[in-house]
Amino acid sequence: MAKTTETQYEVVWPSGERRQKIQPLARRLPTLNGKTIAQLWDYLFMGDEVYATLEDEIRKQHLDVKFVSWREFGNTHTINERELLASLPQRFKDLGVDATISSMAC
Image (tube, rainbow, N blue to C red; front, side):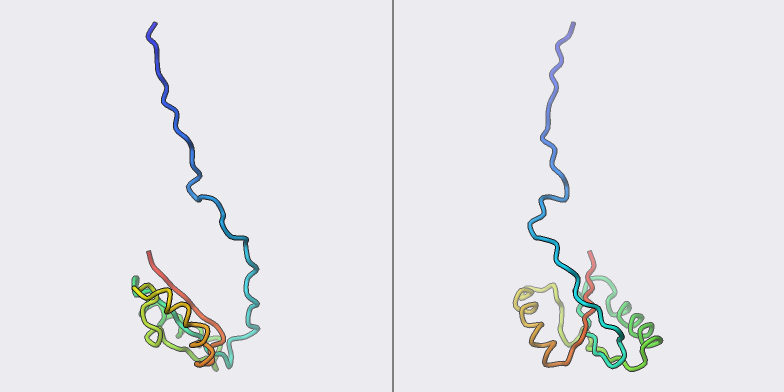
């Protein structure tokens, strides 16, 4: 009878350990009318087209909404990403931003 050797491997969950507690979602705005929405984009997948479509569709339901273009903020996935993201709360305050749409592509 032939002797077989069985190789064993440690199994690792692909998601890894959760390092942060789940945080509650931010309170939602009751309406977008009269609000200013910032657009953030990482310049990877057709955000220019996506944001143009989003603006058109949102304006169909909310006539008095303003947008601060992704062009105002630049690429959010850049060499100075940490500094850029850290500056956003003050920039949003200065620009009167009420909400943000942040998009990325992989």
